[in-house]
Image 1 (cartoon, rainbow over the protein chains, first blue to last red):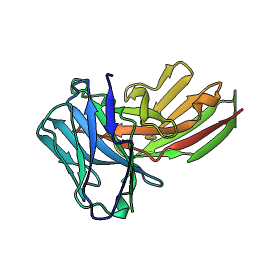
Image 2 (image 1 turned 180 degrees about the horizontal axis):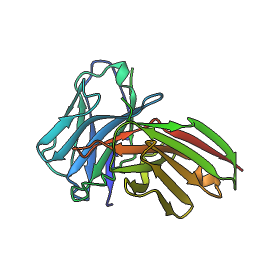
Image 3 (image 1 turned 90 degrees about the vertical axis):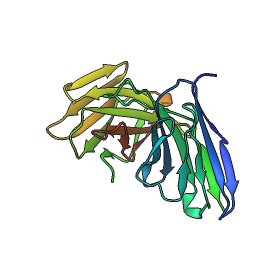
Image 4 (image 1 turned 90 degrees about the horizontal axis):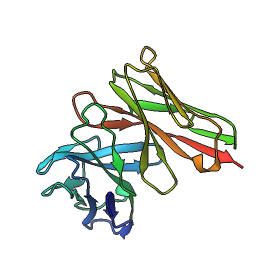
Length: 115
Length: 111
């Protein structure tokens, strides 16, 4: 199906483990984003990417790693998960040719619990 | 830091009534966007208003923008139970294709 998908939708992991959240979009959008959503903080940008092999830090990048070898995929890795990284993670994408609108399209989210 | 701040944080009204949510922001913008998030789902883009526009309509949605006050409002008319959701305003960071989201208004429509 066309759109933006995330996997897994739910994940429970232990402190110190590495975990990778996947994001895939079928629109060939240039820009992709990772957010975390926590009560009291709204959505906070973790990392974003302007194109394949181009990534940049957002507001809360510490403890996370991203890569973008293909336009359609933008995985987010927690190198050594901590309880403070328990959150709901959203991936989003936007088209490059709308530079003055920046409308973003969101995936369904991944609920991550770190025990 | 948050660019957009929504007010109120929570709003509960009866079905059929109008719902108004407000957003204030800090820096100059070229557009402001509103998104809806249903429980357990991702955000969905509702409407975008450009800095040279003062009001915009889309179905039962009416958005206003006052750049002198750095504020926007979202009005949902004739509310329905399906409008129950959280609503976020978002503003782009100048010079970069990033959005900064407020913390949202949680709207509950009571039958």
